[in-house]
Image (cartoon, rainbow, N blue to C red; front, side, top):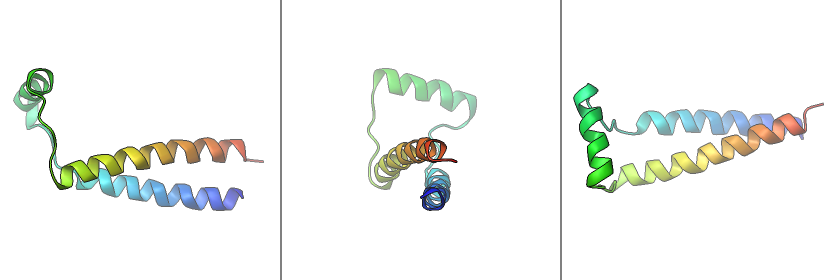
Length: 77
């Protein structure tokens, strides 16, 4: 059981790294961070297309990573 969980954890970890690296940057330096924060606060702009899919996949993989990490620590002998 432990070996299966470790294998799944490694696969999910690699997939999470790849998905995060595929996402486009949201800001360009300090000026982008300031204007990006203002856009988020005042004019919420929804992500479209592949960015939305990558965002949702990132959320699913991160939750799965968290659950698998807890399961590995629980079933460790």
